[in-house]
Each structure stands twice: as C-alpha cells, then as structure tokens.
Length: 256
Image (cartoon, rainbow, N blue to C red; front, side, top):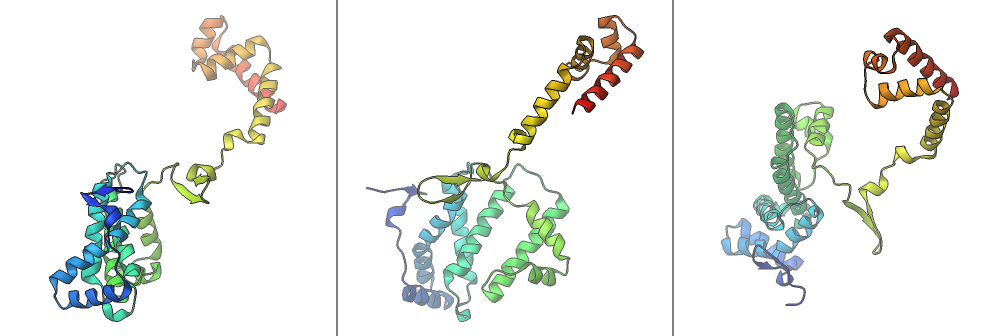
C-alpha cells in the first residue's frame, strides 16, 4: 500500500506503462477496429493523464474531475491519432489532454468573457484540433489565422481572453529546495526606495504647513468632507477654505 494514491477509484501506483513497440501495435490494432486494443491503449496511458493534471494542482479543482476530463482528452487523442505520420503518441496526446482540461476549466470559470470573443476562441480551438489531426503537431498562430481567414491579432486576443487565471502561489520553478512562485516575480512598487523617499518628503512638506492648513487638508482628503462642511466646522467661509486649501497644496508641491 506504500505510495498508493487513488483517483476515481484507481490505484495510481499500479498504473501500467506501455513500451514503444506495445504502443505501436495497439495503435495499429485500434485503427483496425479492435476494441480490446483501444481499451488497452486507454489503460496504458492513464499515467500520461495523471502527469498532465499535475500541472493544474492548486486551482481548487477536484482531482477526480480533472482526471476524468483528462481521460476524455486521451480518448479523443487515441481516436484521432494518425499512425502514418511517424509522430510519438505522447507528442499528440498531451496537447489534446491539456486542451480538454482547459476547456473544462474555462466553461466552469467565474470570469465572464464576451460572447463574440468566446465564439472566436471556440472556432480557434476547433481549427486547432483539425490541424492537429492533419499534421499531428501543434499549429502555429499563422496557420490558425489562415485556416479561419481572420486576423492573427483576433486569434491572440480570443485565446488570451479564455486563458485560465493564474494564482500568485502557482510554482514556476523549483531546484529541489526552494520553490519560486508567481508572486516572487512581481515587483512591489509601493515598497521601493523611491516610494519611501517620496513619502518622507511628503510628510516633511505637510509638517511645514500651519496647523489650520493641516486641519483643512485632513478634513478634505482624509475624512472626505466638503468645503462647506469644513467651513462650518472651523468657523470660516467656504471661499476662505478654498483659498487656504489651494495655498497648502501649492506649498506641498514646492516642498516636493
């Protein structure tokens, strides 16, 4: 039982791995209509599905669901694979499995994309699968644009719109010790040396104002009060509040 992990009731520790000659023979028999060979191909490539769904960990999705969706992609890959192209099955199968999982995540995403953009994206995905069946490799943006007769930019925008959102905690690199996450590659502009200097300069400029000017700015910009409310509170006219406010702001600008 050591190392046993069950997904959909399957003990992943016991998943078989097909050799190249076994894979070739089963693919040939499957194309001849042998259903038992097709079943053996599916069973022999479940570890491939398992390796693909590892890329989607940390998204809060149920692993059983992702595994089942990945199996659908595997079956589509088996049924559409062309053995005459001389391409390894995994080269064709992995993008098909990934595409099926991404389609599932996209359809169940809380992020809404416009109908026209979604329709374009679906057309691109259909053309992509068609070209993959024909060429047994991932098509380029230029090939998709030519196939659909639409500008390259529209394809890029449509595909970007349906890309799964990435978590700040998604790992992007690991050397076996520390894991580098997305958030580690995002700069924090609020804590740079320049921002600290600006904050210090702003505090100094405000400190040089008179007490009444500081009070007016505090009520106007920190408490969100109107000039009329400020004038009623400190006992001067609204016009005086306006002049003092503008004068204080000009003094701060000069101090910066």
